[in-house]
Length: 146
Image (spheres, rainbow, N blue to C red):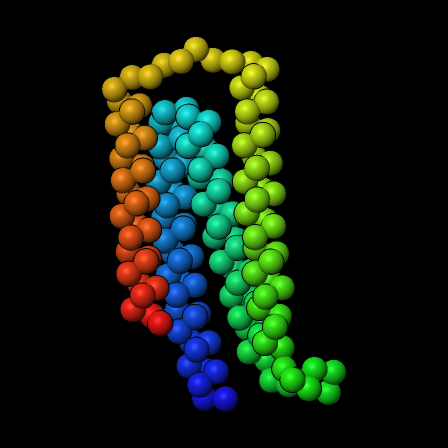
């Protein structure tokens, strides 16, 4: 049981780090979307928010999987984590695709002229750079947390 608790604590630490990183990435992308008016950047921001929600579901799944065995589950709840991981995967695809489709249809119905300025490109590059650095930090956190 002690080994299981240590693994639970390490997993929880990594998920919290990923949650913080995803929220920081989402904020960066939303700022870039607001400045540039980019539908793609808005979609990426929504995707990062969905990832953050997924981290919360994974935390819930970790908590449920760590529950002790009881009469109805004599072997425990360890497999419940797989169910919540599956829910997370469905949400990533469904919500990410749904927002992209809705925004794409909206842009097809009422298109706007392309206004690629140096400033807009700079904000998009900056946003991608900040996201990349945050993800690299999360990867190093995951490696040290295991």
